[in-house]
Image (cartoon, rainbow, N blue to C red; front, side, top):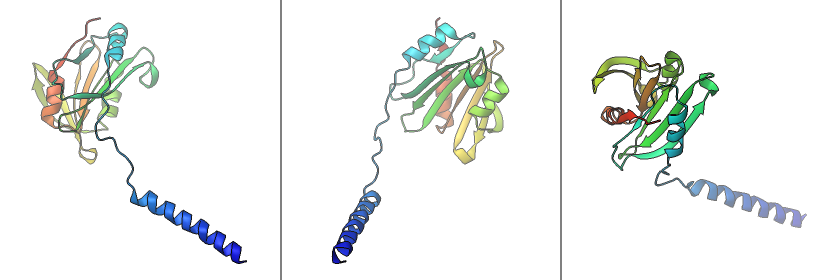
Length: 174
């Protein structure tokens, strides 16, 4: 009986020690965002997009690309090409570009998380529609082109940073 009690106490002590370690030692977090190269996705976009694709050009090096994904077909429907490119801004906020030839209304709704419409803004001779989703801290700018594609610039970055990203967009050479 004494051996059972001692064994149980040892097991309980080990479990308690493990629980204290789990609670007391914080989980590691990435101190610096991982920068990605989006050159491959951009090259594929230039070849596959049935619309005049655009990409950022001339952003400062302090804008770090942290995500890139190109989808052909998929959730946006057959014949669609959709590119999403995410950046970490110099202040650590997120700003992303999403472009597609999918149905504009549904795409904008998804990318802006059903944001509340705000007054539009003019940028480089184009009128961008604005929306805000305060519960998520999200601001969005979007533009639907007569050429059949939609651009969304969105994130928790400031309006000035989103405008900077949108102003940097240039046509991609096929």
